[in-house]
Image 1: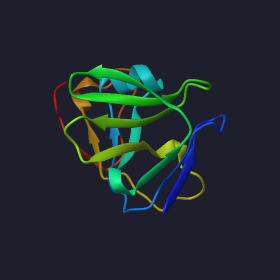
Image 2 (image 1 turned 60 degrees about the vertical axis):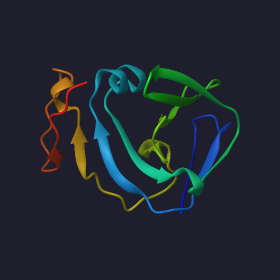
Image 3 (image 1 turned 90 degrees about the vertical axis):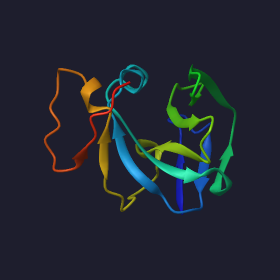
Image 4 (image 1 turned 120 degrees about the horizontal axis):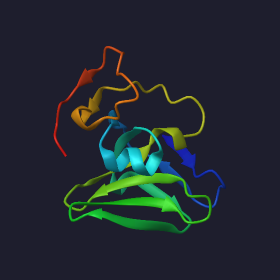
Length: 126
């Protein structure tokens, strides 16, 4: 079980299921919204309980991004055709025991940093 919240605490969540696919996304949308790359895990929608008023931004015809309108914390990524929701790893409380499994959209990453760990990189295009 994982618990987390936004910066101001107006939105809290509990992910009761197993975390899947901890990944870092380097696409331009994630970089613009988060200020760098965005690390997230996937959780089945049925296993996610959210308290508070999540604001949603339709980032593309394929997905929306959930955030707190009070403090601006970017918390969720939801593909419209997906049974899972991406949850920001940085919003989780306490130690998680998780490790990144992959970097995605690495061809779109910012030119101001290098990916230097040994985690798999996927050269997807946005």
